[in-house]
Length: 173
Figure (cartoon, rainbow, N blue to C red):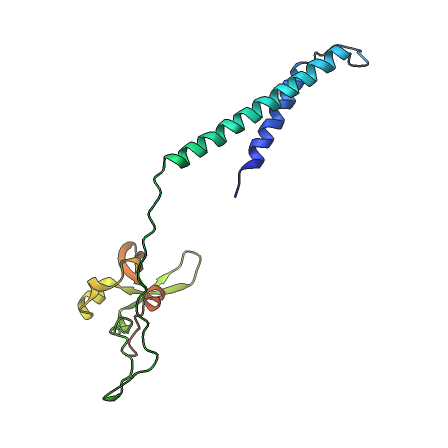
């Protein structure tokens, strides 16, 4: 998004301030003389010229910064070979292996219910329980870790929704 509005608004306010400073408050003066109009127009023209000069200097600085930056070389990367869409080989049909998305099931009895601030509760997995009943706790994604306050003290836990999004599942037992 471009930031033209604040700059133009600032220029307009400055022009109005300069134009109004040329006016003097005098009681019962009915009209502005030609000399006063000339001063007002000269002040407004000065502000416009200064604004254009500052804008031009700003654009020139941006151009110089752009020139100083070294251009990144474009490197050609050979595309990865496409995977075969079928799973037949000389031994017959081989179902696809999805080892990177299949994780061991997390123990359901490690689910704890944490009260929400405004009533209700949500489920999370206790890290302490997982340490005892799940061998690969350290392999769980760090993004899914959280600290929850339960019974007055803070406990380490894992967000169930986050773990499910990463491919982990809860056991049925």
